[in-house]
Structure formats: C-alpha cells, structure tokens
Image (cartoon, rainbow, N blue to C red; front, side, top):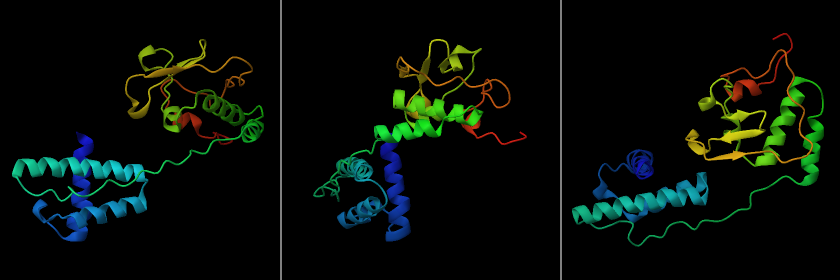
Length: 199
C-alpha cells in the first residue's frame, strides 16, 4: 500500500503542482500522465517507470469508481519494460581482481575477503555492507567464522532470509590481529574503510 501512496504523492508534488499548476484530481488528464511517464523514462529504468504508472492506474481506477468520475488512465498503456542483460565479470577479470588483492597488509586481506564473499555468494553490495559482527550476541551476529557461514538479511535488513556458505577449496587468508580488525558492533562500512598509517 505504501508504494501506491508514495507514487501518487510523488506525481502530485513532482508534476501536478510544480509543473502543470493543477491543484485538484479533477484537472488531471491523460496528457498529464503521459508527460509524467515520459519524464520517469528519461531519468529511470523502464521497469521503475512501469511500476509508478501501474500504481497511479490503481489510484485513478479506485477514484473513478468511488466518485463516479472518468478515469484519465483508462485508455493508456503502461510503458514497455525492456529487459537488459546484467554485465558480469569474466573469469579473466575475476583472476585479475584476485591478483590485485594479493598481499599481507590488512587492506589486501580485507579486499581479498570481500571479493571472495562476492564471488562465492553473489550477494548485493548493500547485503555485504549490512553484515553485523557481534560474536557475543547470536541474535545480532551475522558471521559464524568457525562454521564459515554468513547470514544475509536481504533487502530492507529484515529477518534473515538465507545463509550462504563459501564453496570448499582454497579460501582467503584470515584477517590479521592487531590494529584495524573488525570490532564487535562496528558497522561493516566502518570496518571496510582503508586503514591510514598512524591511525
């Protein structure tokens, strides 16, 4: 429901009031919807524009039924969604990444661990950044270092939706002890910052 209401509010604030100078829903016509959709297509993906279009369609369909008014979107079609292939790394590029992370420094070992998790699990960057380390609190800890498991909370950081275990075989070296290791409770973004000399 929130997706529908936010789409309607955005259309009203971003186009109707600011650009078209219209202050009531009765003033909305098909051309307004078409111009708003064209603006979305210029700035966002066709899939996102289609989602916004369909949310507006539900609103105007509901409004037409409630108030017995014409639906300005009745004859309009949602924008066509174009499916684009997501680029992936080749085996040569992955090998080059591995080579770039070789070394004994904290930064090199950290980068090697990040690349290994990405290639082994395919998780999103936001999922990786959201990994929590609280070894004394299982409810807030996403890492099982002994079991070699990572709990991925997924989009929105809600309840755990899956666990990923890296494949068997050669694994990245463990992070060194000393300055700069992950601290209990530290966010991954803070842990991932490159350590500067003298810190």
